[in-house]
Amino acid sequence: MLQTFRDFPRLGAAILWATSRDEAMVVEHLVSVGRRSAIERTAHFFMELAERLNLIGVSSKTEFQCPLNQYVLADALGLSAIHVNRVLRQLRELELLTVQRGWVTILNLHGLKELAGFRGGYLD
Image (cartoon, rainbow, N blue to C red):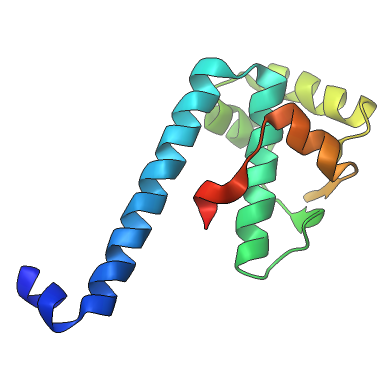
């Protein structure tokens, strides 16, 4: 491995960059589960997903396809499916975000970022 890094330093840098980004994402997820409320956690999840999809060019900053059902979201967020349903309703009522028929629409990008405490710098 060390010889490969010596022979291909750009490859080594790319691997180290990817590893450090992954570590930053894991830390961010641990903070989400440990310190954020359910609504903050959900908002952060959707902000991160929007940012990641936008970085690879498959969405806009405010609308993207999301085929995940509430059970999958619940597992990802460490919540129950019923709680996810309530939180999504809250986000809709606050006019921050809607999830309908597999599409997420961020209605108020600034408001959702503020609620989530989202600082996306760790993604790039």
